[in-house]
Image 1: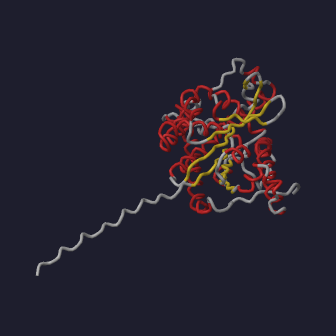
Image 2: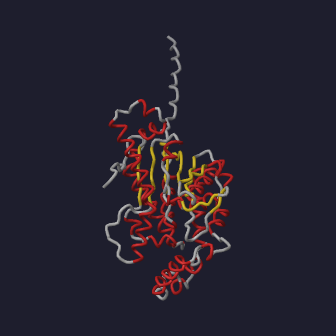
Image 3: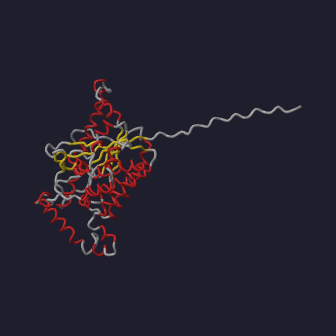
Length: 369
C-alpha cells in the first residue's frame, strides 16, 4: 500500500525581535571649571549604555560646554560621535594649558606645575594673582577681552549642528547682569557667545553682551537650571550631575580654604533653592490628593510625575580644592574623566533598575533647617 505523503510541516512564524524600549532621561550638568572633566567621564560612560536615551540636557558653565559638544557629536555620528566630540573638546582644553607641552616632556618633572622646585612658589603666585584680580577688573587686566574658550569652541563644536540637533534638547543658563535673573538660551538660538556667557566668571572675563544685554556665569542664578527640563521635555527621569560638594565636614580656617568653600556655597545656592521648591510642590500635591485645580497647571503635573536622581562626585572630587578648577593639564583632566566614568559605572550598577520606576534622590522640602 503506497504511503501517503505527509503534509509539509508548517513553519512557525518567526518571532518578532523584541527590543527593550529605551529609558528616556534628562541630564542636568553643573558647572565647575576644569572639574567639568568629571562630567565628561560621566557622559562617556552613560553614552555606552544603549538602554538610555538622553531627552534633554540643561548645562551651566562647564556643563554648557559638555552639553554643546554632546549635541554636536550626536549629530555627527550618534553615541560614538558624542564620545569623540567630548574627548576632542577636553583634549583641546588641555592643549591650551600653559603647562601642556612642558608637562608631557621630560623637562616636566623639573619645571612643570608639579615640580618640587616650583611647588614652593605656586601658592605665593596664586595669592598674588588673586590680589591683583581683587584690585583690577578684567576690563583693566584684559582690555582686548581675550578668551581662550572662544577658540576652543570654534575648533571643536559645530554650532550649526547643535542648533539642528534632533537627538536631544539643550537649555543653557546664564545670569543677566542688570537684574541678576536667570536667562535660558534654548537650542534653536544657541551660539558660541551664549555658551561663553554661561561660563563668564566676572573677575576673569568681561561680561558677554548678547542683544545689548550683559551676561555673567549661569552658576549665580541656575547651576544647573532644572525647571526647563521638567517643563519642556517628555522624560520623567532627571539625573543631576553635581560637581560642587554639598557638604564638607572640615571647617575651613585658612584664607584659601575659606574662599574655596565660599565659592562652592555660592555656586550651589541656586540649585538648593530650586530643589527645595520642587520638593515643596511635590509634597503639597501629595498632601492635597493631587487637586484638579493644581493639575490644570502643566508644570505641576510634570513635577508630580518627576523621578529625580543625583550622581555627585563625592570623595572622588572632594580631595581637590576649588582652586584646582583652573588646573587644565592633560594628566589632571584625564584623572577627573576617569573618576567620572567610575562614578557613573557605580551609579548605573546601583540605580539603573530604578529608572522609570522611582526617584533615588530625596528632595529637600524644609524651608528652614
